[in-house]
Image 1 (cartoon, rainbow, N blue to C red):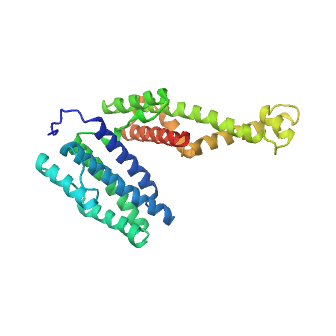
Image 2 (cartoon, rainbow, N blue to C red; image 1 turned 120 degrees about the horizontal axis):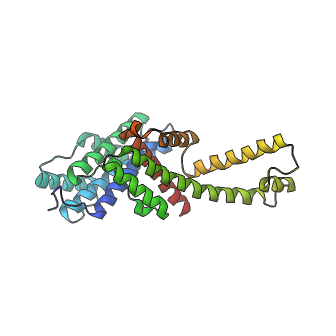
Image 3 (cartoon, one colour; image 1 turned 30 degrees about the horizontal axis):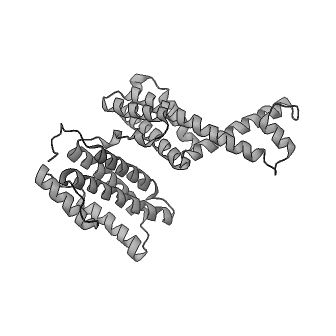
Length: 290
């Protein structure tokens, strides 16, 4: 059985753990929202994250899939780790509560509270992290699968960021994450600009708007007005690019400030933030492109 820490984890298992990590991130972002519909979605995503992690255990240690029902899946995974690794799956009570919340949503129309959503998010991520570490000997915090990103330059940079961070080079990882993000920003910015240009030069805009969008420094305005309008255009493109990537401009500025720090001042937590930030932007970019 594949319980030897020296044995490489199969690609399918790494993909399952990565998907569980993404589901945790997506679910955690909405599970404690002030909006009831977001909390509903968040709880459903968090249980899917747990199910994906349990399936990874059953597929890896058992060589096959368990019953699709959640209790049977948990029982199968627990039996495998107990027998082969003499370990007990953690957070049983908390995960039972997440399953209870999901059942309440799907069968009773109940909306989870913000407190329940926040607690569920923390438990789901810690469960995935501990399973990845104990069963698969993988650090889920640095796990990235750039193979799902189509742009080769972005994929290569994300792969380097993950590998370098696992080797302990936080500053080098941040630099690689920054390369991936800036390539994404450039590609997305081109698309955003082209879309905005189509809108600004469409049949419902005035000739003056057409002329200014294509050349904001023409003689229609004073130099001061032209500079102001050109700056506004640049800000609009920047804001639209950030929204397309699913981030806010303050987050972009924080990321870029981190990328500019002195290497010796970069911490592991900052490198993790940078990798997750660039990876999430890449995933959002892929979903928009598809």
